Image: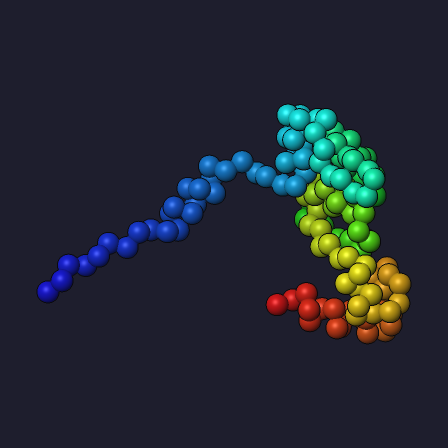
Length: 141
């Protein structure tokens, strides 16, 4: 008869790793980089170069604005914007508050719905819901 092979306790290992890790978010990582290498380029877009320090300061401005509007940890926001630095800066600012951000690029949204910015319409609008249905299937997999 063969001996039983011991099975490692994976859950225990996962919990130990989880407890040893420092809470990390996009916002906290940008802040860390802004402290350690403030003048290092964080983002290059077209003819613009944004350093970690500038990116962090601008993200803080957005965080302060959204906090003043009542956004808080656990809130969920769909951010619909074209490709440009502010897309990431706003997302980082929201992340600093603990807001969960779903990034939606206008190029993708236009593919499914010809109306501009359908997500800012009232939720009860049938037009907005008609635009949302085809996008929803592609986002939820």
